[in-house]
Length: 193
Length: 252
Image (cartoon, rainbow over all chains, first blue to last red):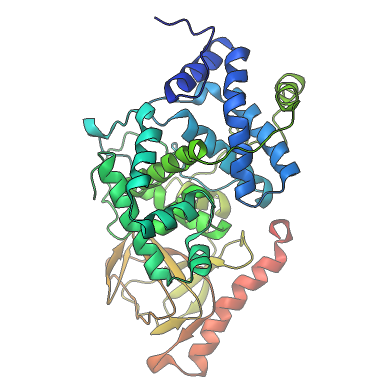
């Protein structure tokens, strides 16, 4: 079994997961530094793409990465990849800061929560493969679908803003997003409902 | 991150059949939705495992975008400053989510947690304002400038005036049901009407119908109710929620 005390470079999903687990179990600062080297520039880039000025983005990035450390024990490798988890931390930091109140989310302890059905075996996605697989699918999308996906996920535009920017009718943007998501889901082996 | 259920439900809950568009869920996942729509989507997600899954999938794509987009350059002392944040101050940063804060839940299970928190308790604690025959309203502290949020209670079997909309109208059923030309909407179901939609919803006869509604622009009654009274009603709804906004300047 590979030692978790000296993590390899953290640019693969698997290495990132090992770093997170080492942080959670051992307060491993080397592992944190490795994750920081990879994710801090990407968190900052995400914030700036969303319109945050560079100096504020720098500050929010440090706060977000500090939260990665603090919340390490709540990271669940079965639920999502490290990249997705860190994305949600960065997203919530950005929203909470500018709205001065916490972003509403479904609460697992809410008596009103309708529970998930038992997950089918093939719903468990290997976090390792997701990033690679998604990149492959995005490359294979028809250009008009790839364009709206890019604008939504890389330029952080709401779908109404996509319509404004491209001049496309709102309905067209919605249906292209829907088609693109269906394709991505099929390629990743999800069931299309 | 979408929560896996930690509750053992003894009663089976019917699943919603009318959902927000994929585009709305993507906006929610990427953080592009305004605060009122966040509240609306979070409330629907509480009741809809399928949409929680869709949001989780969109979050996976956003996480992949981290890898695929060009990284920004960070300050040379960024790591040191971050470690200082971690070491120096054991209290959470000013706007870290306070996970230990007392949460408000609706014991009757009608209001999803995000709403119960805003209302300050369960659905039974709401002081409803009568609007017109069979219709009652409770304006919510607007969390955003552009949209008005309110809870609507309709007595069984009551018919809403035939109306169109100045902007979009989002409705989430929390209790009971209503029907219009599109179909029947029950707990968890979402109807999003745009400016082109004119509809005349009818509440189900079995029980009162409680909904969460967002309004972009004034309701414009049409048809039989396109009278001074109808327009007055639409404007009352609009102004009721506006007055609430001015009073609650902590949210401004």
